[in-house]
Every structure is written in structure tokens, then in C-alpha cells.
Length: 309
Image (cartoon, rainbow, N blue to C red; front, top):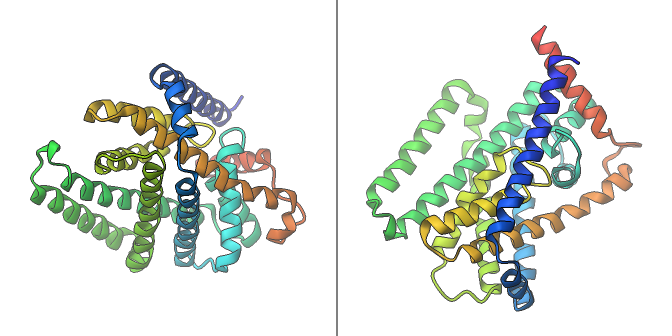
């Protein structure tokens, strides 16, 4: 067995362990009967609006990614990119092994348009980085409205400005093409996160929550960062466990925090299902047949071998 194959197996094993550990911890801390009653008594009109808000966030996210693709001179129509993006959403949940939606899109576009893997990965990486920046900005905004942290507002606001300036300066020094599209891409990043915050607000309304929203929205934002932790099934259990831990730390209703996170997970799962259309009908993407997960995984390993030679 080659070193890269071993590392790939180890990475997949780590993902499974993380997911199982998160699900176990969730099962020990979540009151499932209370969760069931929350769903039964929820206002499904607000849940439907939450679904629409999340779908909108993904349409904006697709456009943001396409802006990064244009930076590397890959010109895709918004409609074609959206179809491919939806396929990636599905594969984030259901592809086996170490291949996620991003890796699949990189392989697909490399094969179809002949772009170098490194170029495509850079576009996907900065797309993700812009999302983390938007998370940080909104988190700072909610901290300002939470006096329990006892952090002077001036410090929080200064950190947001200094962090953004440093981020932009590094982009300008080392990744100038991406810096030139900073406003366009990062306004879209704020739009994506804004619609996802609206999704969380609508979930809170659906659950008939009448207390302060800001602590739960901050928990929602911070727990979103756990999406970068390697796991399976679209971070199943990981984000929800983080929401419970944060709820306990902030001394708010951690059961509600976990319920918001779980409902958000199922909304994102439902939203990914239209991607099934392109797996059943590849002609929608102009293909006779889509690459298999095994094909993509092999290509990723081959690329790493070539880099090391």
C-alpha cells in the first residue's frame, strides 16, 4: 500500500470517528422527546420560509463561486454553474470516501475544460475563505449586541476592521487577481451568510421562541465553523454538538440551540436533493456520463503523486 493510499484511508477513518463521536455526544445531551415535541408544535409556514431563505443563500453562494472562477478565467454561465453547484451540494452529503462536492467539482471542471487542479483549488479555497470572513464579520456584529461578554464595542469593531484590512492586504500582496474582485465576491459572501441568518431567525420563529434571538444566532454562526472539520454526511452531528456545547457555555437553552442546528441540517439536506436530477440525467450538464467517486478519488491521489515527484 502506498503512503498516499494509507493517508487517504486514515483520513476517511478519521472522518467516521469524528462523526460517530459527535453523534454519540449528541445522543447523550439532546432530549429527543423534547426535540420531537418542538417539531410537532412548530409553525410549518415559517419552516417553509426558512427553506426558501436557505435556497436563496445557495443561489447567491453559487454566484459567488462563479465570480472566483472568473478570476482564474474560467467562464461558466450562471445557470450552468448553478447546476454544477447543486450537484456538489448533493455530493457533500452522499459521496462515499474522501471525495466531497468541492473535490468533485474541481475534477469535473479540470476534465471538461483542461484547467490545472491548482487553479481550480485556489478558486474554491478563496470562495470558502470569503465565507469564513463573512461569518467572522457577522459574529462580531452579534457580540456587540451581547453585553454579557463584557467586551468593549470599540475593541470588537476595531478587530473586525483590522482583520479585514489585514486579510485584504495579504490578498493584494500575494493573490492580486482575487483582491481585485474583493468587493464583488465578499458582498456576495455577506449575502450568503445574511440569508442563512435569516433562515435561523425563521426557524426560531417557527419554534415560537419569544426571548432574545442574538445569543442563538451567535451560536448558529460560531457552530457553522465546524463545517471545516472533516466528517461524513454533511457534518452530521458535529455542528449540533458544537451548538449544545456553546449553549451550555453561554448559559442559554442548549436544547433550543441544538434544535435550530438540526432543523438547519435537514433544510440543507432537502435543498441538496435536486442535485439527484443531474446524477440521473447527466445530459443536464452536457455529459453522457458523470465521473464516479472512485474515478475522482484516484485522480486526486494521482495529482498528489505527481506533485511529490
